[in-house]
Amino acid sequence: MATPVSALTGCKLIGVGSCAPENTLTNDDLAKLVDTNDEWITTRTGIKRRHVLSKGETLGQLAHKASVKALDMAKLAPEDIDLILLATSSPDDMFGSACQIQAALGAKKAVAFDLTAACSGFVLALITASQFIRAGTFKNVLVVGGDALSRVVDWKDRSTCILFGDGCGAVVVTANPGQPCSLLGMAMHSDGNGHKHLNCTFKGEGGKAKDLETASEVAAYNNIHMSGQDVFKFAVKSVPQVIESALENAGMTKEQVDWLVMHQANQRILNAAADRLGLPADRVVSNLSEYGNTSAASIPLALDEAVRQGSIKPGDVIAMAGFGAGLTWASVIVRWG
Image 1 (tube, rainbow, N blue to C red):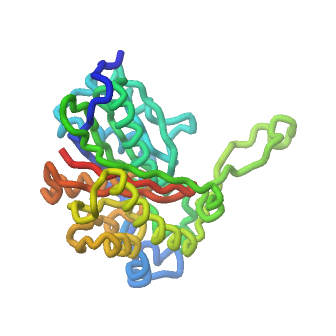
Image 2: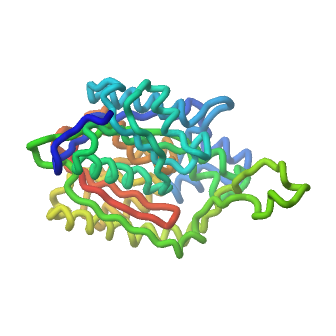
Image 3: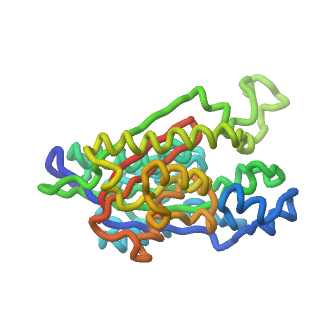
């Protein structure tokens, strides 16, 4: 049974946690698989290494560990959580993995479901959580962003294998009755016409039930396809615009932003957005060199490190932005703590 709260209440972010596999792949490791080298990868992406699942390791295990850390910071028990949202494009089960997180935590009263929006997923899940709280439906929401795209990468394709890693991050959002809402502004967009530039499509065709030769074949997905230049051009143009739209929605100016916490896809995209907003490099949270592109995990993973290092402090204004397959892109302006 959900904990009732007053209608149109505000919300605030009170806990964050993250987890990445111990197993890593450096640029030098990739040079043994494809024609590349550390300098080539670093110059073009800013990535030095990435964390990837080991045999027997699951996304759900990462999500559980990240969630425990977030709940500990929030000083909440699993039983206090009303809703669990898992933003992912690579669940352990095609039917969703949020319920497995619920079970592992022992969050018995929580409703749990997955949300799929690729690298924009965490931002959209955070906005979704805020709407449930503002409407008075739930009090405490656990928002998890996680992906294990190493499972759908062609590790002999130089254009994609250098980019992706696995990881998970989680944030606890809670009702804040009688106080200003810490989610200050938002903007969200989609363009299905851009699907051709970045996708991971089902491998197979219809008619399986009527073809005896394929009737028992194991279903599968193709490896990630990405048109790098097209995605780069889209991101450099769209991301600064969506952040500016979210600031306008919040009634704020870019001068009021303390930190930029973006989807960690490419250092050049981070730099372009920072330049557009007039933010110095030391105000742009970047852990891209360590983790690569972890899709829906990248924003909460970067946020967790910045909070625990003491860089982001209570009261700081953060501009978050996600962008990726769909195509989707979204931004949210939040006040931490």
